[in-house]
Length: 423
Image (cartoon, rainbow, N blue to C red; front, side):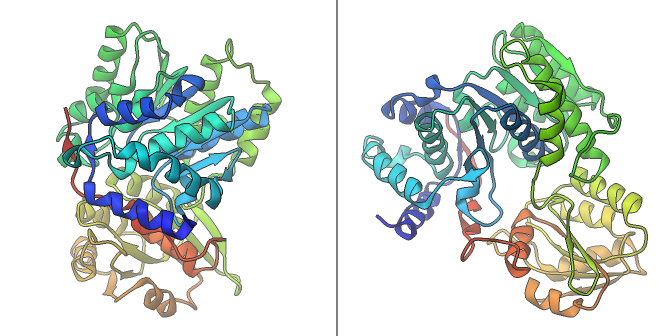
């Protein structure tokens, strides 16, 4: 099986949709020899900032000399981004081998209970990290936490970055309900750290932590003192404070020197989050996946603080996101907006996005275009461009701008249908 054939097989798994529940993942992991039992984890959930916190933790522990696995989603361009060891992407050959090994095990499931794409990839990652003899795995949830496939592990520590509105149709229509799903990663006696500051959400996390006798560390949702951090925005300083609190919690099990902490944070890299791209003509492009209102608020604050003036905005979103609120938050920033469809069946209509920007701020010039390529052409002479909204759009921008080392993108693997609850 070639890598291309492997990717096509993974595409086919999307037909099984997305289902919440742990039964299939436990069974598939058992058929694979329960590789999770050979590994140590830090399990990270939350609404925003999960990937950034994971990247920081990975960088710190790698700087301390550990062999560190990193499991995140979605990917921006290549599927291989999801599974990394010491920030080296899993090889095409390894992906193909893992799929070959797991295919016979998939036949042991009835057709109406077949593992989903994310369940299969979760077990593939566990097998790979175990084979690579990782000292520690930084383990990001996919969606939610309680019934997310990643929740079959018992970590050394759990992390909940924050709780905000996103995926309400599946996680709940209140912060308390969303927090209950995220707090599902809390295990008996396992320490938990959070930067959540929403009172209703924090109350739920505190309650679940007490129930499980899990020591809880609260990280103030305000920027830490200056630390050498390449990731822009005050929200990243909060993420850094959370990562540092987690490292401190685990010092008895995994000692890390102050020098390794500084070196790790100084070298952390996480594309698509306030990523600054210099243009050949001296201009600037900022890429940021602000795909929910909380993310848009963080982007706006960072731009107002660090980039005075009015950028040109290129914006695309998924229809199942709260794009009207996102447009309302971002509308005061730009002088001009180009809205585009995202390369997804779930894309919001570009004309409706443009209308939402104009309704929020009548002075803004908002134009709907057919695609990102047309938008980049329309503003190629602009000195400051911000490309934001869906991470799908950010991934496409990385390709179009020549910033990806991969071939044709595999962003279609991020697609999923509405989750079903699997008891």
